[in-house]
Structure formats: structure tokens, C-alpha cells
Length: 88
Image (tube, rainbow, N blue to C red; front, side, top):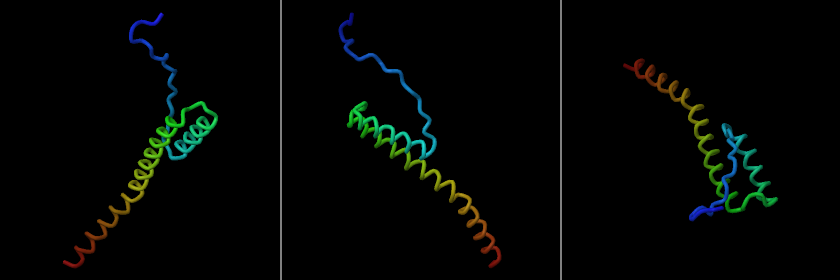
């Protein structure tokens, strides 16, 4: 029997997903698209999940780019210091 103010649906078991790479996120998005298509997930909820997943992918790509360029920037600074020392 439900008491006052307890008209909530029972909580579903949550599944933890490890979305560590853009490939993981793309697979997850494909799964969400399929579930929206067959009616397992509400399209509004699917759209919200897709929006957040796209933000996650962009942040992963930004981190990747920063990690790729950091050593190059350090090397450029070293070369600039050597060039300046050579002039003085």
C-alpha cells in the first residue's frame, strides 16, 4: 500500500557505463538511437542523453589535442630560449 506522497515509480537498477574514449561514446549513442527507434526510450530523454554525450566527446577530443600539442609547445619554447641565447 502506498502512503501519502509516495506515488513515485520504483527505481530501476542503474547500469554503470565506462565511457572513456570517443569510440565508447559513439557506441553508446548508437545504442540510445536504437532504443529510441524501437520505443524503449522516450525521444526527449534520448535527445538529452545525446546532447550530453556530444559534450563528453568534445571534451575528450579537446583533452586529446592538448595532450598532443603540449610536448610540441614545450619544444618550441626550448628552441626559442636557445635562439635568444645565441643572439646575446
